[in-house]
Length: 59
Length: 140
Image (cartoon, each protein chain N blue to C red):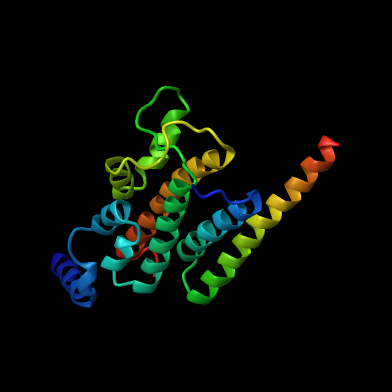
């Protein structure tokens, strides 16, 4: 059984979803890459930010 | 008037590449059944390979995390899970035939795995619709 850490799961999810979003939502390869990176950063960044927010709320 | 329209249609057919001819929903259906197949039919090899690798990997990671494959509907929310799973096309059928996936979620990673499998299906639908848009010329 594959048991990644929570962060590894977030990174894997963001990677796969960002590739699909980048290819399907933009028309030129350059814009696909930019949009894919943008989505990846937003996925991971928002997960990290929300995690810290929940950490401080729980304290 | 009618002759001019016929000439336009004939001219468009001449300009259409070979892969743009035939059944218009074929890339959509092929893309749903096999991730990336819709793009391969349209000779978008790079895009198809990346889409296929991403969707199949996400599904495989979900299975490896002992994610649950929905087989029936016991609660109202199970409908959403089943719809997501069925969106994987033949991957779902193959996983069911091979007895992959868990019947019940027992650990946290298995819950994540269940989401990975459902989201892989939803991404597969997005990719199949993209292939359809390429086929109809809505996207270049």
